Amino acid sequence: MCKPLIIILFFLYLHLVKCDKLCQKRLTSDGSICVCNSSYCDTVPHLVKDMKPGKYQLYSTSKESIGFTSTLGNFLNKDEHQTDIDNVLTIKNLVTLNQTIIGFGGAFTDSAGINILKLSKRVQEQLLQSYFGDEGVQYSVCRIPMGGTDFSIRGYTYCDQCNESLDGFTLQEEDIKFKIPLIQKATKIRGRNNIKYFASAWTAPTWMKTSGTLTGKGTIKEKYLDLWAQYYLKFVEAYRDHDINIWGITTQNEPVNGVVGSKIPANGFTSGQMIKWIRDALGPAVRNSSFKDLKIMLHDEQRILLPVLNLFILSDSKVLEYADGIAVHWYTDFIAPAATLLLSTSDKKNLFRLASEACAGYREEEQPVVLGSWERAEEYLNSIMDDLRYGLSGWVDWNIALDEEGGPNYVNNNVDSPIIINSTADEFYKQPMFYALGHFSKFLISNSIRIDVEVFGKDLDSLGFLRPDGKVALIIRNRSENRKKIQLNALEFVGSFTVDAHSINTVIFVPK
Image 1 (cartoon, rainbow, N blue to C red):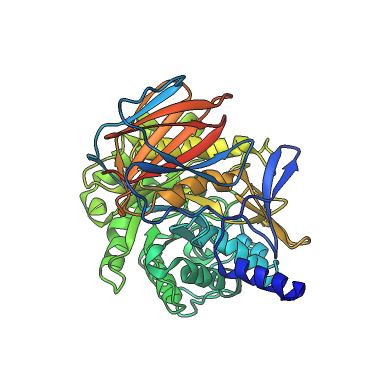
Image 2: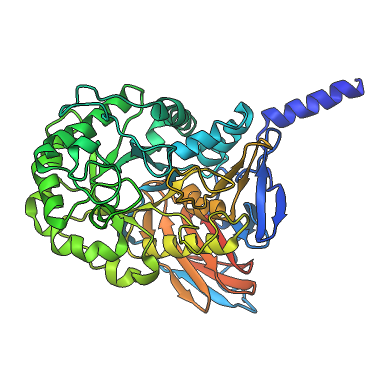
């Protein structure tokens, strides 16, 4: 056989046969990134099929080695001696806690779509596969802004030209061009039943608001609350017409912005106004519509304000009747301890709690985008581990992709993202944040249920979950500057392995 034909057949084989691809690493002044282009993009190593009890698979990502690596191991007999152990993790039983995973993901903002569509078709596909594909991190919950946000190139709603009615309600170019096509592709890649979309509104049309503006201080005029509820339903219907099913809605993105005044588009709601909005307008409109099964999530605001939600809004029995969950943002977490605030939320109805927005680089003193920052990955890990430890059901990032400046953002509120796009070079960069979140989105699949894990030793965090496929997923984070040798007492199994300094790791195994 001639050499050119052999080469052609070899590359055809590589194309047809799935193989794990390691990070194509590029050093930056602040760390390292993984580079994806038209010819190459790293993948998540495949989970062993038909894994037998007595074996485990360890996935690792660290400051020194970003990307996913995978090793296979065998558990030992209980009587085999373990030496030089730094930490011990123990799973005594598979009794599940009252915490079920909904999922993890990010947001399809206008800015994300604008950036992704600047890439060639092949690189766009690489990016979407990285987030949603079987060889990617498999996002399962994604947020869709209902109209314009600061991560748009202009302020807009779906009824700017309407006159005290919704007769002129129409999706905008941003939906048709930048969001809907990518959402449809993500749904096709991930599978319709494997991804949930929820929608959040930033602002109502100016004629509905007391301020007459999209930004600044202003709330919905009380006479328009019912109309504003119908606006939500029109959005859900319009997206359904594009074959996108909306699973849930939040009651308002960061309503405090519209109370204190902000450059970000916002509707302000005091607690009393929010009660009226949900109890008298949104709740009845949704439950009496063809979209009655929509999940209604309250709050969509900072963790530090959860006591206000608990004391006032959740004290109204009718509001509680309409509510399904609570959405929480992370921007004040550094002054709002998880233990005191997340545990203070009412459990009168066992509402699920979902972290609905987060991003790094949002503080004024920070550089918006820092390529290769492991410190920002650690910010993600701090938040996700804390939130899961105190009962949240998932964690949703902000923009799924931004440019190298952290935009576009029409009010100059640029931030960082797990994927940064360099459209000039037709490539994108997976940040350490991508892999930090990816350990959770990939391995804590929907309907996984938390189990108890005992941790002995310093600088190690761990959370365990029983997946619906019967496997156990054990998330292990090493915060220290040193490698750690770990003994894992997993029911009837004993194992030993080492995790790198500053790393996030996932152990998958099948219990007997």
